[in-house]
Length: 401
Ligand code: PLP
Image (cartoon, rainbow, N blue to C red):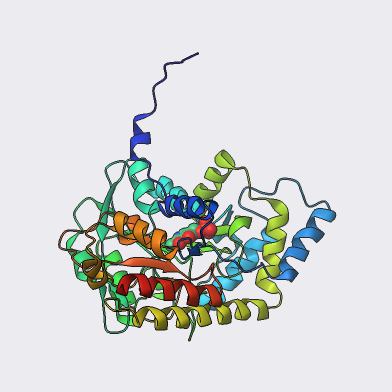
């Protein structure tokens, strides 16, 4: 029986995370009996530290299975406020924290709280595809700014960002320690971003999903700059730091007036975040941090192996970023050598001939005018050293054949 129905107009503006499409193609290739080397998805193949899983089990056994306050249990909110005060020089209390089922929901809840239809929102492109999707879905206008190669890593194109500001610009989204390029702001960049935000009176979403995936030294948040605390909401997540992607736990931290509205959105959407997961998160923040250091050590070894192997391939060049678990090699010459002009054909052919599954620049937004170099994105968070070696050796053999 067919039923005629009309979809809401806004549905046309809803995007997807196209890395999941690549994952589907990789799964189909594996199901056909082929070996696949998974460099496509930003998930970790490392277990959540045992003391965190034990805390979750304990909470379930103790009956901590009911609803919590919409903004989360006060113990976790206080612990997150303390964590921020220690690492980001804020003076937050629990009133500045709304726990979320993942970091991702912070994006839409922030936009719903501060963005009006027609407002222009600056967002990084290449970048996490959900920014553009959510801005457009909720009636905003997504305005991209790019990244450029620097001496030892990518940096954000802050000149382009400034040029893109108009009298309709209300919001700036920054993802320092960037997915997909691993771009990291210098102290000068942080200062300039803050000055622009203050000068043009922008509300700012600081997506700090990779703040703690930093190999040498500590990350510094843009929120430490003058004028930023009162205009910024930080996206925090337990996903990457504690290898908890599937637990779905994050938080929005910012001015209490905004956090109160985000809490109201929690009531309207999911009521609250899963209670025993929140107790586990309290253990994650306050308990033994050695497993977190172990995760970073493993990731760093993988990074080094990947970078060395990629730079050994003709027509490929890759920075060695100090943060995140992504690489963004320039493959312009390699693609030319193999006679490919489109990413889709190229990555499909690499999967078919080398079994290596990866994302391309096109999965992180439409390339900007004037962009001529070609890039791939490799995530090394879900693949062991031996498989990295084998996969990238096959990738080299294919590209140089
Ligand atoms: N922001 C960025 C830049 C990400 O790469 C991700 C996940 O890949 C997220 C936010 C959301 O992560 P989660 O919802 O697992 O916290």
